[in-house]
Length: 328
Image (cartoon, rainbow, N blue to C red; front, side, top):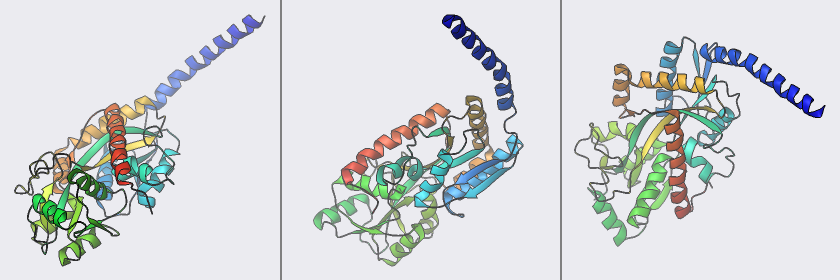
């Protein structure tokens, strides 16, 4: 009797699952059936916001549903990312991720409770831009080698501006210090613009910052770019060498952007969003708009996005440990 009841329950469960499967497939096939919320973890006007709004606009056009962009700044982007990680995993709440929110914050801030490797569905990588090493016009250094030489002669004599614990610029600074064995005097700033203002005025000597923020000042002759922390030179600054060409091949770092949602999203929804993102990133107008920001589109599968972000967490974990980096 017990075996009969068990077999009966098993058969009933199978019938229920079979009955629900067409409904699930149908729901996924009609996705999206309502507006999508795209969360940007930073204030309006910045690079992440500009990129996120561009992607949101194109998603709406291609998916046939409104994409509502919500800016939710706080805790270096972690507050918004945490909210998305806790949202219903139905594909209607997404977030623009980056190195801070989806790789570094969890390593430097004990108050960040999510783990990007298991608490998110990584849909697609969107774009990347290399970090630039900038020098004040007042600094008597015209190359990376000059900076290393000055710092080794007088340790901690150079002031390097830091624009946020765990930011791309901060982590590139730490990577540079560890690769060269030099010491620099870290000076915290609240954002790229205040740091670049002091760099132009000579109050700071060095700054590592994504190229998007710095290009207008470098091209205008107000700041000096010493190197590109990328694998190739920038088309906008063809005379500026890469870190590899400057003798520091370990110092490679890009500020990247990704699209993610809560863990457990339906595979068919993830694939549809991924295909849509790849189509958007191939649009000539989108490529041109990204190029104007010195960004290059990236591509790949959801699995490749998840693998890349896991590798970023592992990579920066070593740098954070070596530098003993923690939020104050």
